[in-house]
Image 1 (spheres, rainbow, N blue to C red):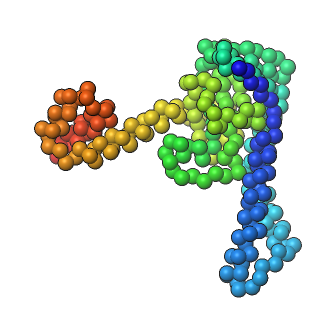
Image 2 (cartoon, helix red, strand yellow):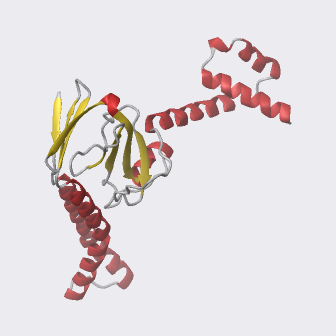
Image 3 (tube, helix red, strand yellow):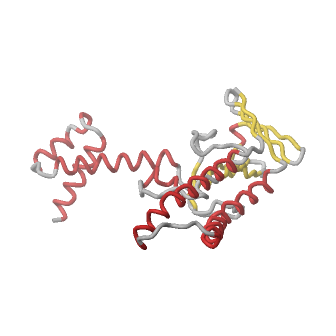
Length: 241
């Protein structure tokens, strides 16, 4: 199965829809708040309209700048992914090259900080810039591409290459010199899950005697690895104490 990607207007449509929701919220909530605070009816006059328009414009500036950043990077770029043969064909400024999965040296998804909730469940709320992201793809021959999601809406999909890593930033403008630490999202999620399971076993086993705990270690093949890890942590604390 092959999929072809070129510049689309999905991001702009999403941005427009988010703005419409924000305007609707202001129009609905503001009159109620005004009446509650001032005990008078709210009048949407020209001055208030100007203030609201300026606020919305300022809130959109980062999104518009990132969109332009993406557009000028990808205006001459298209690419096709062959999911069966694991090949990617990239056309940039009229030149087409074909690569296999073995040609890739680094694959990194740069996503908005909102999507880090999948790792740490921090409860971040989405912003107008949250859905912007790009794919930094490096090949062993030195070729490098920045495939933004005005070409391909990859944010919610499994990565094309299994060893893809992730970077999370507030503003995902294209940073070609970015060298900060990346994470493997699925591995990080598994680590978090394992830690959570271990904590549950610690809570469950902490009332057991040392004899019972050592018995679990002796028969560790019969227990989950998180259970064994929990026993080791409990015994270590007991010995330290």
